[in-house]
Length: 379
Image 1 (cartoon, rainbow, N blue to C red):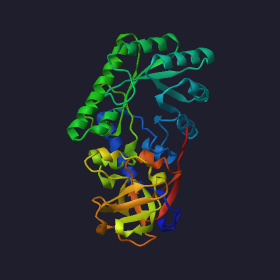
Image 2: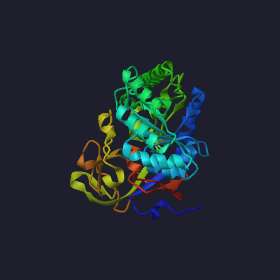
Image 3: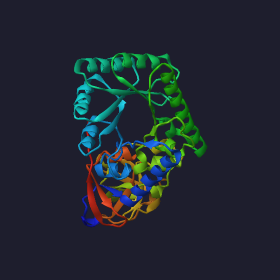
């Protein structure tokens, strides 16, 4: 059903080009098939039922979430195998219990003794049947237990003694976002695999079944050459891609499926500025490309059709105002378009940009909005 031309949309608005999204999904699913590993897509980027279904191949399947609100939302739409991939805390355990009581197969993660004991105490108090993955630090990027640490077996022992299933191990190779070549991405993917598999082998040698070895980031998923010993891969940004991924060489700018539609509201010609109605409330404050070879400011500027306008970026953002200029700052190179002109801005980090919006305006490759997909937000 047609919802009208994008020219009629109030701006800012979040656009999603469905053919690009479908191509991105097909690429990832084909890669997982080649590597002979199960796929558990991370829905934290999309936060949308229609996109999640597409990521799972058309029907509800195993997914990864980053909030328990997402777990509630997606479980209400037929997704029953859910990994909550943020370290569990005691104040969330009643929510976990409620999901388990509804028949949802919810697995939690943890990387410390305090969380393990809190989970064990909750199991003892409620009788809930809980499973947990122990998070592994494969690259020093964020959370997790080092693969060779004695803490790994200590945590597993506490869980098993307290009636919690030691489901296995998981990791996130966030360090892949700091890789700058195909070779380094492939090396990071192998490091992620090898260290996480090693941790699982230590658990098994100590008598824990640990059937799950879960790894994942979009760059390592797409650049891995071998996933021997891994049982599943998680990735989420790939569904839409963004400028950070393009800067890493993981995708091209033409693969980016999401953009923010904005309208020119004025000019400061002596400064070389074009002002638009999309500020950081529409784009987010993420400046993830600032550490890359090409800094895209708050986003790359495209015309209303989605064609990049070379070297025009959003150089600054206030709450509801964006400032567009030539990346090299020449005042005489201002973007000379009339007030009322619609433009698109490609995001640095699509998770952060999409989180600023309540819905996607779905395009099928033209200028017509064919559908509107709602997003879930909050915690």
